[in-house]
Length: 557
Image 1 (spheres, rainbow, N blue to C red):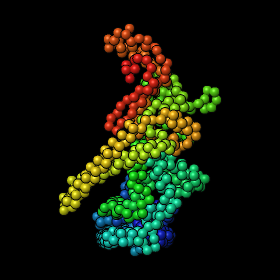
Image 2: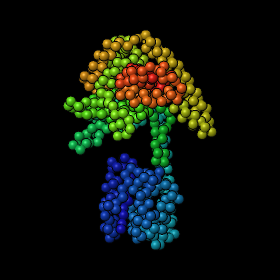
Image 3: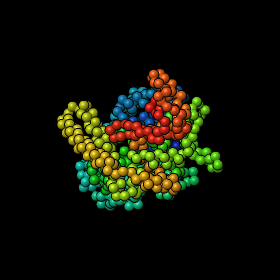
Image 4: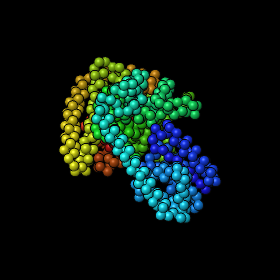
């Protein structure tokens, strides 16, 4: 059994002739030496560095060495490669360990360039000297090349505002011929802006992807093809855009260190042309985080059928209330039903027609600023704008605190003259956090005053409910689903009224020593449906009970 190993470490080499040259040489050498070389035994590691050891840590060579150590490669096999530096350009000890490991396992190594064979049976002093000197020189050459490249890039970074570092840039930009600036692709700029707007309005990556593909908007770059051979958007590409601060014009230089990509220096502001403002970016991040925490990133149906997904609880057993579609016909329709009851466990199998519940909820829930979402009056629009500014400020505070914590962590580890610089950064971030919190407090006060001064127009809400349930507009319903989650913690539903709860409440009253003759008729209004909404205030969690029938409510909360 014979193998060949082919490797190159850079994209520039891939664009050249490296693979073809090495492959042709390996096959010619095997034929000349009467060694059978099968295609499945040709190991290729494209773009993996032997200087950092990537080809061993995550390449085909690493797997081959593991198979050798495990005894899966029979003794007497050989490995053909162009030169020893294809296997390793690390320090002499590491390179020699690899070679000695192969010799110990009975694997011969053939190097094409010098026609030498390192034989496992008689690996002698000359082999040690040749391989050791070659390993030393290869490592020295790679180290010098690394230092020259680092120096060149450091010089480029110093002149970053006079001339751009590289032609690589976000896919909505292109470098000018004189390499002094980037120009926008207006069509792609609009697409990116629409992605951030959708995200800020509560839509998840899956939903945004579907919208882009349904509208036949071409993806950036090559894009993956579906089974029909059509290129389309994917959640990963949308997420990559949403987390890329290049949309704000920022650029963070990086470099490779031992195969890992690490940040170099500070972020450069205004390196790229900004295509969205910071408020929209922060609102999108806040919405994404809110969806993650509330598990709201659920793949919704075509018309966002359930505005309350993940919020509804059964009043009788505290299980989740599920959305159920019973299809068309006289017994069809959409309902909310307890998950325990639906699965046959002990609970009240009573349903609440979804459209009735949605209308009741929106009409009674005065905390939701839904009217502003569908184009209310000027004051409502101003309140919505203020709400967006609060979301953006909260996200900004979180980002600043994260940056400050990172500097603090670095400060604890550093014991050089750079401590003063890092400590200054910590102070700078702390001041920025204090300013942002002061701004947040001011905006929250403005919002509270606006909410107090503007009563909800019930008739307007009824129109909105009708619009919601009539046109099935996906984006509008998704926005309102996101708006609900900003204010609502949970909704407790009792679709069978108090019937299942009265016996439990009476038993509790007996235990409390209450004279039941003073309570009155406990069955009054017992069949009336009710729901209780737990609202999330900016400062505390409080509870509001809507449609309160009977006089026993306090005993079965």
